[in-house]
Image (cartoon, rainbow, N blue to C red; front, side, top):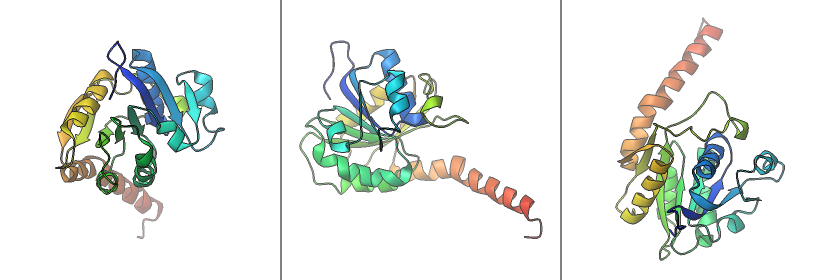
Length: 213
């Protein structure tokens, strides 16, 4: 991962500019951590607000073009899309690039990355910033969203320690406290503190709607 003279990134690509991706872009711009920030989205119309906000240098709808030459690529799209995005982006990453994500479930995306053909100098690190808001979408993006929050990274036997350190340093620069876990420990822990309570809440709501259940 190359760096500017100030110690930041030469080029950061953020794929998916919702709350998390938009907050990453705003945080990086506010802190001067990248010389160039690119946004990749599904449509030009969907990127209109991002372009108008002036927090990125380029808005693109072509993933291959968006990741080409970037030294860090962060996938911030919905969890179900992440494995496919990893496979689509992998052949177009520059030597020395690190690919990471912000998904709340790690098993599928990590397995997808480790199934990709090895490429010299290209690495993947699973990531999950434990941050959010009651609001969603780019209009809710906050440059301070990650301040004082946990950023969970995953390590497997295939993980590059250098890449792990670089992704950890990135989240620390956004104000996060970094913790490294195994994939299984991450998914079990997140399920216990997040997913199961949501299921329980859904069950309570369903019961309230139909008390004869």
